[in-house]
Image (cartoon, rainbow over all chains, first blue to last red; front, side):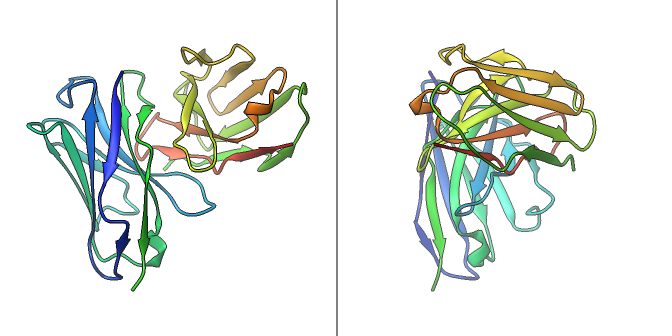
Length: 119
Length: 106
């Protein structure tokens, strides 16, 4: 059973960079049929897909965030990471990491990490 | 981007009721749709994939149907633990897009 766990600072100042890491256990991040995604959910709002990274390093980002997002992978640690720069209060959200598996949707999710953007 | 529209946005129901939630896609997505249940402070949990396939371990009172642009999630007999928010996700094309969700309340 694949498990994912987010980690990182819960408070980020405006204009700075939000950084989160997702650790994958119970399976290899190098699985050929897996794409590793980030999804966020602002308070009392719906879910927004941010982007994915494949174990070989290829990425795909939501155009709405593409200019500010970097998702990377570290296969040696079975981890992948999110960086979102130039954050504002609008980036305050619960950030989830998730796996896009063979069915094409998001089947395994981390528990989520609340990140607040505030000075 | 493919826009997903879900209705209703909120729904009041009682234990034992049969409820149906609908998702509409702005263009055809075949059966590339999943349904999720989310409880406060928790991650989404996949209930249905490929529009109508039941996730292992999910009670059979949940069912999904539809293809193309119209989809539905039906709960045949509501149980107390089913009161939550439900959302659909299209994965026909990137960016993946979710609908805004339906909050199911007692």
